[in-house]
Image (tube, rainbow, N blue to C red; front, side, top):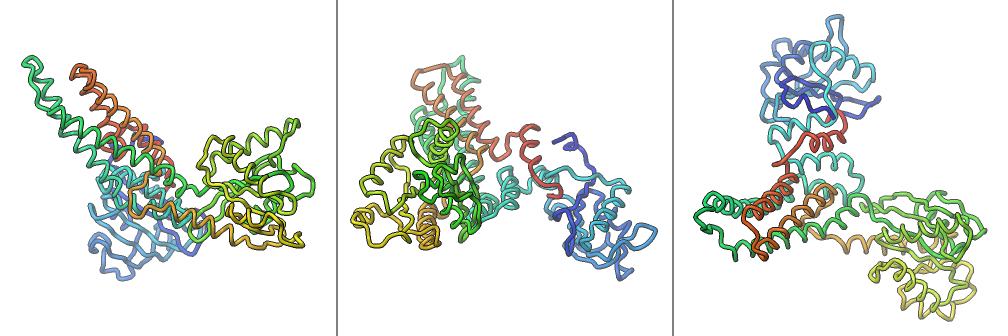
Length: 467
C-alpha cells in the first residue's frame, strides 16, 4: 500500500458499496473539497437550496449531471468536519445500482480533480484524525468480515475501545515509572534513586500478569473469529465422510464402502446458531505401509492437534468399549495433549438388531449414538458442540483475537521479564531503561501510539476500497 499520500491534503472518492449491480450504490467523497466538488454536479430538486449551505448531517434529493445531461436522480448526504467518519468534510452520493451509473459518477468526479481512494484510505484518514485508535480501526475491517455472531461480538467489543483502554492503562502505569528511571539517568553522577525499586518490581509483576492474561485469551479469540475447528477421526470405513456430509447437509466428501477412500483432509465451514464451526474430515487411522495413505494419517494427527474438538467415530456393530477407551487414550498420547476434548460417536446404529452388551460402558464414556447414513441424532452432535462453544464464553472479559496484538503483547512481556532480570542482577540503569522503552514501544504499537508506514500499510492495505 502506497502511503505517500499521508502528508497530502487532497480529496478522495470511491464506491463504498460492493462492486456490481444492485438496488442502490453509495459513492463516498472525503476531503477539503468534498462539498464543493459534489455541488458542481449536483442539482437539488429545490434549486434555491445550495449544497454548500445545507446543515451538516442533511440528506438532499436532486440530480447528478455532467454538463451533457442527467446521469441519475440521487440522494446526497453532507457531513462536516470533524463530525464525520473520516474527521474531514464528507459527502455520500446514493444513486441507483447500475454499474454504468456508478462508473459514470466516479469518472466525472475524477475528471474534476478528485483522486480515487486507496484501499482502506477512508478508515486510515479517520485514524489520522484521531476518530479512533489502531485497534478500533482494525475492528472496522473485522466487523465487515464477520460471518457469525461470535466474530461480530468480538469486533463490536474491540470497536467500543475496551481493549484499547486496557493497553493504554498498562502503558500509562509503565510510563510513570519509566520517567523516574529516565530521571535517574540525568542524575547518574550523583548516584540517586527516584524510583522505588520494590514498588517498581511489584508493578512489573502486575503488568506481566495482566499481559499473560490477555495473551491466554488469544486461543479463544482466534477460535471465535475464525471458527471452532472440529476434526472427525476414526478408523477407515466407520462413516466419517458420511457424517461430514450429514453435518453440512451436502455431499461434500466422497462416500465409499472401500476402506481408506479419504486420503487427505476435507474441510468446510458452517455457522450454527451464531457459532462458526470448521469441520475437518480426516483419513482413517490404521497401520499401513501405503505411502500416500501414510501421509494422510500424518495429516490426520496434525489436524487433530489443531482442533478444539475431536469427534472420534466408530462402528457400533464391531467396536468394543475397551477398544474405544484405548483408542481415545492413544490419540491423547500421540497428540501429547491429555486434556484434548474427544467426543466418542457411535455410528451405524441403524444396523443394530439389539443393544450391544457394551452399551452401559459406552454411555459412561459419554458416547453419542447416531446413524450418519439415515441422518439420525445428528442434532445430538450439534447440541454437544454448541454447549462446548458456549462454555468458552467469557462475558465482557477483554479477548485478544488478532495475531498482531498477540505478538506485540508477547514482545512486551519479554521486555518486562528482561527488566525484572535486570533488577535481580543489578545491571546498569541505562540498560534497564532500554528494556522499559521497548515494552512501551510494543504496547504503543498495538493502539497506534507508535506506528510506522509499513505497519499502517499492512493493516489498511487489507481493507476494501471505499472503507
